[in-house]
Length: 115
Image (cartoon, rainbow, N blue to C red; front, side, top):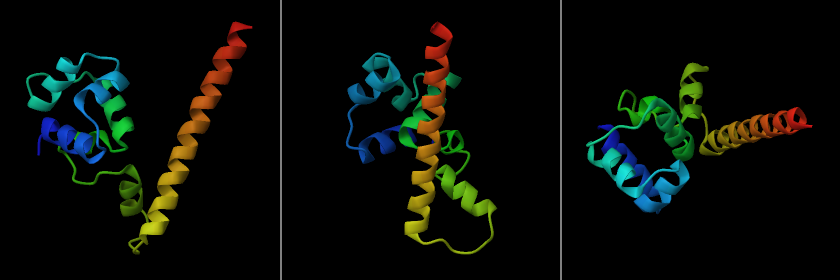
């Protein structure tokens, strides 16, 4: 599956329209629409932003992997035991916690630099 199809699928799964996703990316709707049709491709920064927004890996977006979530990649690399859906949710929640913590640290360091 190509990038455009994956973007469209993820967007629809979240119940969003192209305008919604374009606003998150800070681009025009028509630009995002071209990503979905394959008439244009996002630069690396936008690709990473899309992966973070949809909570998938860039490899998944680019069609290089069918594993959507990075927690699934982590789980695949860990012991080959089966994880319950609840455990996978806990791992995803912890990952989100770490992202928010990193963002807060960055904001705090920026605000202390200004003072």
